[in-house]
Image 1 (cartoon, rainbow, N blue to C red):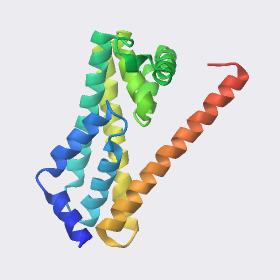
Image 2: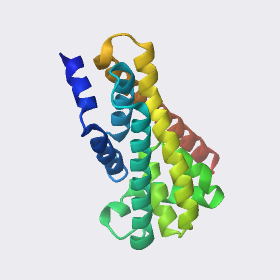
Image 3: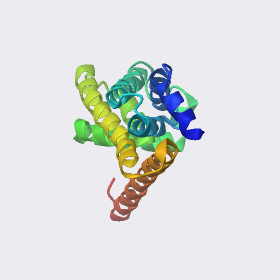
Length: 202
């Protein structure tokens, strides 16, 4: 029953437009499950045959790029301290981190931040506020968005290919794996930050 429901949802004409909205909104609200949606549809593309896997990657990449471009524009025209949420301790720390990293290597930090929600927001805002040239930033952001979309989609596709049990199992396992990988990245970065503080470096 659940397998049939998931296949019908994946085959709906609204599946990819909804994916676009979730991924684009994820740029602004980190609680929106954009990554999980990409991974789930990647799994369904293999286990249920719909939507086409190329379509999932293309839509997710376009939405991720649109979200990054919108945050960049927000930083460029509004700065990084206009609203109260921008002045919270966590956001300020992320913005300071992004500013230091952008000065060193813009391309590598945009790629890295694409996989880390708060870092992505901070890098996009800071790039806009510090007037990183739009053509340069958007080119790198587009490549990073495509790489991220392919990565998230293929996690789901690989699980669906390797794990038996149909669409429900494929979706549950692939989303759990994606979340676990994200948590692992967070733990590694937190450990590196603690090590830097212990060494007295930023």
